Image: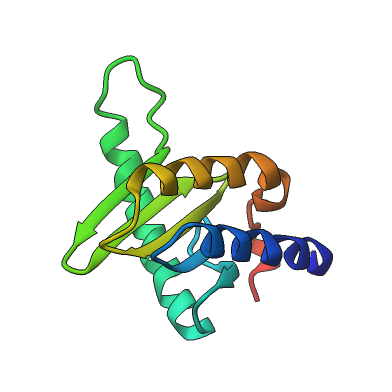
Length: 135
């Protein structure tokens, strides 16, 4: 797993450095655990990852209200004073989150996030935790 995270780190850095105005890039599990980060400290990344778990759960609940849809969250975008937040499904039970300043090119962020998910999707897949893994 450490080798996978090392490989992921440079890819997260690449996203942050090639799209102007990106502040933070975080990879998290569906249950809100930070798996990797770039551009932020671990405490901030942990808080954002925990918030993302609730957000993806809410988005999935809303998704089930669309007839004919699969009910799965693919992308959530939130605009707030000062910037944007993006949360994208990135494999089975894994998500990619990006915080960006308000001057960011929204189309470029979405495209680069999709490209990153496609390149490293196997690294972003997290197994379901069983009760025997919780200490």
